[in-house]
Length: 342
Ligand code: DAH
Image (tube, rainbow, N blue to C red; front, top):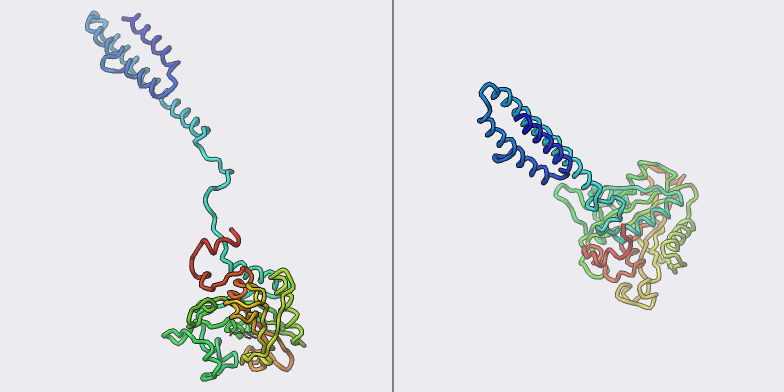
C-alpha cells in the first residue's frame, strides 16, 4: 500500500509538470480524482488491507487526495493567468495608436465662414459677442429707432410668441445690449441666427444667419466703414472683390447704404442667384443713428460709429458657390460635408 501511494505521488508530480493548459489539467483531474481514477482504485485496495492498518492508510489516502486537489487548483489558477496574458499580448488586443476608421463629421459651411470672419475681425480688435434668439420688441425694434407702426417693420415679417416676445429678425437686435454692456469706445461683432416669415425660394429662407458689427469711437466716419468692409471681403475671398455702395434706408443708421459685391457664382454676368443683375446685396451698413447711440447710453455728441449687418448665409453661398440657399438647412450631408472635415 505504502509503495502504491508513493507511485501515485510520483506519477501525479510528473504529469502535473506537463499540464500546460486547462484541457490537460481537466484530464489530470479525471485520471486521479475521477470515479475510476487512481485514488478511487486505492480506496478499493484499502478493503484488502489488514484491519489494524486501515486507519493509517485511510488517513494517508485522504491526505493524498487533498494534496492532489490543492495542486490542481494551483495549476488551474496559473494556467488561467497565463492564458489571460497571452490574450492581452496577442493580435486580438487593440492598438490605441491606430488611426480610427470611424468617419468624422464636418463643419457646416456657415460655421466655416463665421469662424473665418471672427478671426479676421478679432485681428482688427473686435470682440465677439453672443446674443439671444428670443428677444423683446424694444431690443429688436424700438431701441433701433423703429417705433411701433413704423413702416420699416413691414420689411421684417416677424414671428411673435404668445408672451409678446419674438424671434429676432436681425442681429441688430443685440446692438443696444452690447452698447449698454461695454459703453464707448467699442468694437464688436455678433453673429446670430435670425428668423423671418419669408416665402422660401433659392435665395430666401425663414431661418438664416447674419453677422452684425459695430465700431464706436471718437471721429469714426464712412471712410472707416468702407476700409473695414473692403479689408474683410478681400480676406474672405482671398482676392480683390468688387464692391459698390448704394444709398439704403434703415432707421437705425444715417446715412445708410447697401453694400453689394459682384456675384461670385456667375462672376457678374447674371444668374438666378443674383437675379441676373451681376450684383448681390451682401452687407447693408451705415453710420449709427444718434437716437440708437442715446438709447444705448452713449453720447452722440461725443461719439460716432458705424454698423453693418452682414448676410452670413449669403456670404457662404458666394464663397462656396452654393446656388440654392435651401441646401444649408437641408441636412444633406453629401452637399454639406464637402467643405472641411472636423
Ligand atoms: N438689420 C438689417 C436687416 O437685417 C441690416 C442692417 C442694415 C444692419 C444696416 C446694420 C445696418 O447694422 O447698419 O435688415
